[in-house]
Each structure stands twice: as structure tokens, then as C-alpha cells.
Image 1 (cartoon, rainbow, N blue to C red):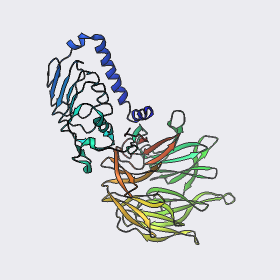
Image 2: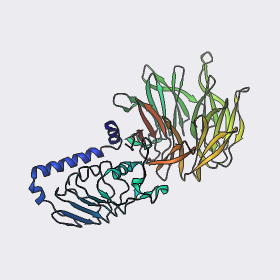
Image 3: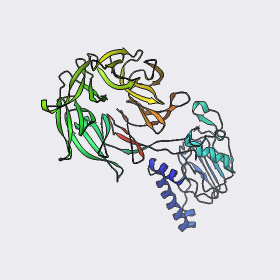
Image 4: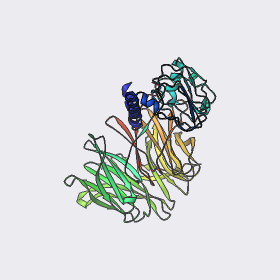
Length: 508
């Protein structure tokens, strides 16, 4: 139990620590000052005070200093939004506490600790949410000896009107996540890779014209800057490890695209190859994959005059050919935005999406060793990104639509079929990710909070889990290391963020 509380305090920042310190200092002040503390008490504005009673109407917060002999506190018809841990612990004589008609939605753990004489509590007129964050309040209502007014749920919709203390939540069903840290400034993408037991992340940062490489510090438990690959309008950084080569593919809007190789002697990345990009005008995505023993990557071209191109790794030093070389031209004139490689039913497919036509599927021909156009995915328009994921062995696609609803599709009967639509105006990424046996979708938009959805094993669909804030996110990349789980979210317009995923059983 102590360990769980430590986790909760950590990912919520130092709020608990600050509250504790403030309470302690006030307690010491009143302990040593004695009667002087009582004489110096000034009745707050908007309140009426007597020796044992304080009545406040229309206030926004609990008074910071209150004489400890007060036995009746009334804070009604106000805008109090939060009751924190131990907020009333310096009022041990309190018997009557009225908090009705405020703006409370949740009450923090142990908010009413230190009140041995509490007889009546009024919480009516608040908009309590019957969610995991209120599990402590639900439990406290069942166990307290005080008389408490009926507390009804204001939400979620399926809970409205029900009594809060009639809604038990089974242990283990209340899990939360929290923000860990701020990262670097603007970035377009984040790619995780490992080499010689070390973990790195490559971030495309157009505003600094660079591809930033960072290394995980196992002692400090965070990322530190390792290398900086400079370029011109860098829009993509993708890693690929081939035999003893550690390569970073860097795509640019100007000056062509290049491949950098890690140099052991210099302990940095140096230019290895200039990629043939005669037919690529506006690279928008890099997809790296392996078919049998051969490595490939495709650069997706989002310009009207460009051609999405497939490259193949060649290692023929006798012919002075070691690197990636253009192998096949794919889509032409369609403003492609993203590509995703999938393997299913023993076959290899490449999905290309476009702003100007339905998504198309290419099938790998094992005879010609080339991709051939296979089919289209109907009824999905204006797609900007596609990501594949698996749940219980089934293959799904998460398709991001900037206008209209984004889609979740399932592979069945040799085709993809829509199973769920998610409202997503302004969305640029619908990213699946998994921690342990929990499957999530992060829907990132330029106009609203990022919405995190959680897979429901019974309905086989995603349900809203929580909101997090990242300004104009462009991807969500997962790292599990040192028994900790992180989510990297590059931001196109603001600070890129790192979130730590922490399992906290809020039902305890």
C-alpha cells in the first residue's frame, strides 16, 4: 500500500508534498503561538464568524487559517473545485461541515482525515463523477460514522442519478496514467532503437533543422542528448539495424535525403549515403520493413508530382554498392501521406494512403519479388495516417481522418472491414500502443486534447479512457525499460512530451 501511494505522488508531481509542508508549517505556528494564533485570526471576506462557527457564501476556496476550536464550518454556494488530502486536519473539533452547491467533481484521498468528531457532512449540489478517482470517497461514505447527505452521480452518462456510495468498483479495475516530464521542443516524429544493450531515440526536429539522437541514462533514469544530425527542413528520422550497421534515414524537404551510419571510433553518426530521390518532391513518411532476409524502406511522397518509392538494401562491396537503392516506383500523382507494412495469412502487404483517393493495398509477389496492386479499402476518405496493431491475434488498422471520423478496421475474410468510428475533427494521428495486456489508442488532434481509448475485451471495441494534453501531436512512441513504461509524443507546434504509464490501483 505504501508503494502504491509513492507511485501516485510521483506521477502527480509534488502536489502532495507541497500540501503536507504547508499544513505542517501552519500546525507548528499555531502550536507554538497558542492563544496568539486565535487572536490573530481574521474572519475571511464574505464570511460570518463566531467563536465556534464560520459561515461563508459564494467563496472560491477554504480559508487557509482557521482556529482549531471551530466546530461548524459552512462553505456553500461557491466555486470550490478541490478538496485535498488532510485539508481539515487542523480543525479537530469540527462536528458540522457543509460543502453543498460548489464545483466539486472529485475528492482526494484522506480528505476528511483528522476529524474524529465529525457528525454531519453535506455534499449536495456538486457534480461528482462516479469514476475511479472517487473510489476513496465511495469507500469512505460506506465506512464513516458521520451522517452524510445523499451524494448522486452527475456523470458519466450511464451513472447519472445513482447514489455514489451504491457503486462499488471491483479491486484492480481502476488504473491510471500520468505525465512524467517535459522533453525537447518541437518534433515531427520519435523512433526508438537499441544497440549494444543501450536504448536510443531519434527525433525529427524541423525547427532546428536536425535529427536529434538521445540515449537512455540507466542511472539518472532519463534521456540525455547523444548526437545531433543537422540538415535542411528535416521531416523524418528512422533507424534501421542491418548486421553490424546502425543507420539513421533522414528525409528532408530540401537538399535530398541521406543515410547516416554510426561510427564506433568517433562515437557519432556520420554521412553514409545520399539517397536517390529524383522522383520524390515532398517526403511525408518512412516505412522500414524486412521480407524474408531482405531489407526495404519506402519513402511516401505527398506532393502532386511525386512518386512514392521503394528502396532495397544492397551489400555488394565488389561492385561498390553497399546501401539502399531505388527498387520500385509505387504510387504516382496521388499525394500519399503514409504507408504501413503488414504480414497476415502468410502474405506480405503494403498499405498506401492518400488525401486524394481511397487507401490502396499492394501485395508482395513472391515470383517477381515486387509489389503489385491488390485492392482498395472503400468508404474511408481524406486519410492522413495508418497504423496496424494486433489484439488477441487479430489484425486491425487505425486510420486517422482529418475531416470526419477516424476508423478502426479489422482483417477478416481477406479484407479490412470497419468496426468502429471515432469522432476526430482535426486529427493527425490515431496511434495504437500496448502495455502488458492493455491495448490503447491515442487520438491526437490539432484542436483539442489527445483522447486515450482503452480496448474493452467484452465489446471488442475501444472506450474513452482519459484525456492528456499535447499541442499538435504527430506521433506516440512507446518505450519499456528498467521496468518503466514511457510514451513519447512529439509536438509540431509546442513542447514535445513524455508520459509515464503507471499502474495504480485506485480501488485500494
